Image 1: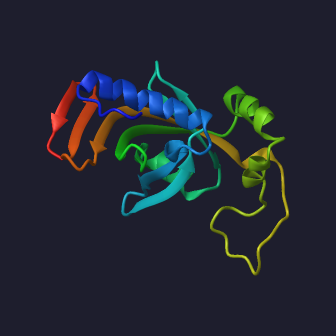
Image 2 (image 1 turned 90 degrees about the vertical axis):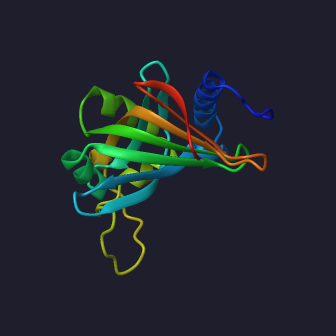
Length: 182
């Protein structure tokens, strides 16, 4: 995107176009972002990879190890924020999310069937839960028993553009579109 968008509808459409591009292009800056959750006492953040997007339902999907801390955090506190930054656009997104984790069923097994032949499948096959203390790096692998799908329903998009001619910020949520002070 080379032109600076000037109206809210065009900005929101541009956000969805860029999110779709992030799924198609592995080099897109929004392909990975920082997902923040909480355990009820402290915030926790980690980089995640966007795997699917449904614009019509405003839903993202991510993959995770079912034993990861974020899975327990989501079960107890199903809200989160995904932060994405694009240096090329000078756009930051803060996506407010309602999160849900599935570790069994057709949605999980069908995605695992597509993923299991790819190198990324190794991320979900360690016999040790994420964050386990190890004496040395381990290459041992298990089964798909630890693969889970995180569904993220987007409830709000907080868009920020950093620009030499002036920063701009807008919010897109159930109440509509509106400008905010940067």
